Image 1 (cartoon, one colour):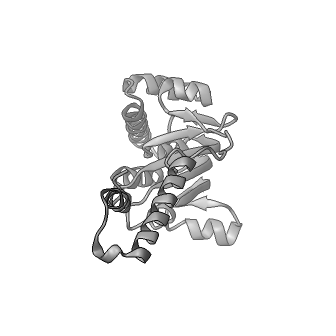
Image 2 (image 1 turned 30 degrees about the vertical axis):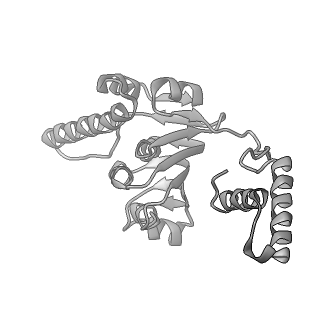
Length: 231
């Protein structure tokens, strides 16, 4: 199962407006959560997003963390801002060699008196801390490391993201080739089995009035072993 995380990340209520009225590519929590298989089978997220709203991204992150199956996030082009939050919900994060991540401080619009401005600042600082907590949980590095990186709007190629622990590995584009299957029965062994089967059929045809020689008994014993898969 592949779930595409493309375009802007927004809430469930606004997603239809962006799609239907503006023709934009967006993803909301319902798009991802509703696509998670009921049988908890493995899931791959295909991410190419400039980011969006923190709260819907966090909702998706939490749903992925709670999902019982294995989740792999593959960043095929970019995971910026809130897009990185969704990636952190996966068990494994892969990046295309040309892909990038970007993390930065949360932002919002605010108006009102100085009390309103103070509250807006507190909200943004709390949001920054919450985002940094998710990065720290993924990487095992201190929260402050990511608060500092966010404060400077840090851009990362795949190597840097792996170094920081936000990604696990590069996408492996090595072609899958057919290889010799060592589980196949060797040619000589197959011939021996065929010979045993032929001898057994001859014994059945001759019947010998139910009397078998020691050699004939050995032939049938060997065939019995093969039939039980004990070779």
